[in-house]
Every structure is written in structure tokens, then in C-alpha cells.
Length: 113
Image 1 (cartoon, one colour):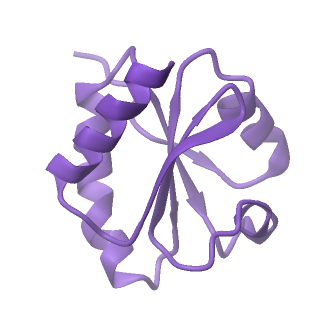
Image 2: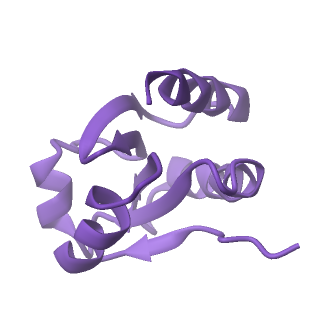
């Protein structure tokens, strides 16, 4: 099975294309390499990207490489996970959580779109 996997976004141009103009809701993982909880969340985000393939796009933003995006969306703690729809945040969670917790967040967000 071919999977979309998780796209890396590191500049405003790809952010504009992959998140703001996406026709699907976009699950965004704001993270950094030095962040332990971010490394714990990463495999869960990969699994979710496969489960929601075709329903939700998944994007990772390394805050060290894209700090202008992090500050634009007031990301002060990582991991911060947000779901964007039509360029707006419709769900957000700060800190590492269970896969179940993220699935609930995605399901509630999908009901809104």
C-alpha cells in the first residue's frame, strides 16, 4: 500500500501550499529534534497518517528551522499538535499524549469540516 506519510514543512512557501491551501484538514506536528516528548509522538503521527490517508494530510514543522511559523501560531511549548482546516486552527493540543487522544482530536475535527 502506498502511503502519503508525513510531509516536512520548513518554509512559508511549502506551508502555504501544504497547509493553508489544502483541500483536506491538515494535522500539524510542531516539534524539534532535541525534544524527547516530540520523539515519542513522532511514530504515533506516522501511524495516524496511514490510518487517515485520504481524509487528513499530515505535516511536521521543525520549530528550530521554521521559527517564524511557530511564533505566528503562538507555539511556545512542543510538541504542539494542531489541525488546520481552510487555513484556520480547528483543534489544538500541547504536549505528548496517547494515540487515542490524537484520534479523538482528529475525529472531532472531522465532524466540524
